[in-house]
Length: 208
Ligand code: SF4
Image (cartoon, rainbow, N blue to C red; front, side):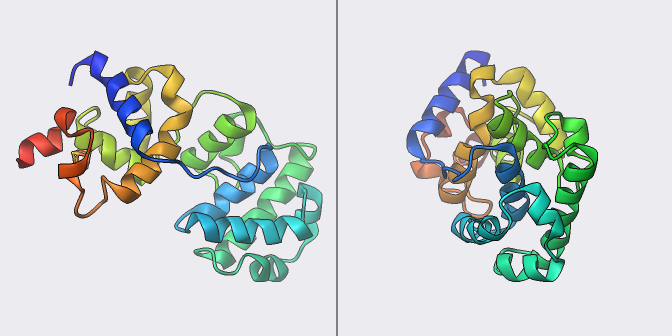
């Protein structure tokens, strides 16, 4: 694929799917919601987060809440017991080590339990308006299939995408690719015939 086609790919992808819009716009709520969201449907995450934030609206109240109580509030999200422990500990660290403020850099964010590169980048992007690319399994799979990257893991994908994709798209890649990956470029049985990206796609070229 030629460099000038990367922009066309992004525009086409963004034209065919509607990304999920999060309910929160401040770093703390985005952080906790994103920790809860792994392997969980958006509507289940939103419902659980809403229940949790009614009881614990800030890091101080969440740090004081028991794991048992948090578990019962977020029950339904994947791995909810483990996530209950993680969000409580995350809140405690934010209170004790960061004066109650979510850190605005990747290094400190990734010290928090339940926070890996994807969660950190989502917080930096949507909570602090910084330019990062949050790479999850959908982003990793789609951009490898397209042939824009040829990588073994999401960390590598992130680095290559930052070199290749124009900066104006970075913060949008994750939310659009997640929907595109759920509906069109599915992990199993991608809908290549109806895909608007097929003219640029290496996977399609090799399979047709
Ligand atoms: S053509 Fe197929 S493999 Fe390529 S991006 Fe579209 S759905 Fe995915």
